[in-house]
Amino acid sequence: MDRNAEAVKQMQDGNIEEAAKILNDAIEENPEDAVAFTNFGNLLAAVGEEDRAIVFYSKAVELDSTMGTAHYGLGNILYNQEEFKKAVDSYQEAVAQGLIQADVYYMLGMSFYQIGDFMRSLPHLSRAAELNPEDTDARFHYGLALAQAEEIEEAMKQFHAVLKLEPEHADCYFNLGVGYAYKEDAEKALVMFDKALEIQPEHALSANGKKQMEKILSGNIEE
Image (cartoon, rainbow, N blue to C red; front, side, top):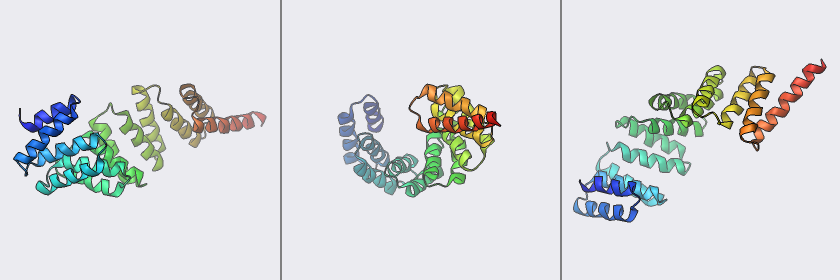
């Protein structure tokens, strides 16, 4: 087992100090080892040393611009620091260098989502859900992006798909309630808001939606 593989195993086993020592030795032995710099960046990011991690990721990219995992790691830190436009650049570079993984597309889609560019978030979130059909976060946010783009029917399909995987997803029921309210089906909307509140009684948005639908329905009855 080479030093990088050994370090990754130590990290997976929770032996952070041992992993750091192995990677430090690897870098001292070969200062041109972009993989070791990337792995050290991953280690530092995992323990919250984000500023130091950036230094290691940047060095890895400097040594080997095709190191997709380094671009991805850098993108994650930029995302955490709410530098979403810069994160987009890093994630796009990771994809360009062949890192075709669901998590990369998800984070790329979320970066666009966070800056309010919902149309550009759509293909990436869709791809993430396609690559990992069990990823409810990707599918849920794909649904949200569709809703923001006013693709209500397709958004609701995605929320229903999430519920098949995660039946107690309160936010999905809330968003379905919003969808039915948009379609002027107050009765179905009320059912969805009630379900969200059954799962999460403190869900304030659903409580407000429930009140609004009850007002509409009581008005209909009076008429």
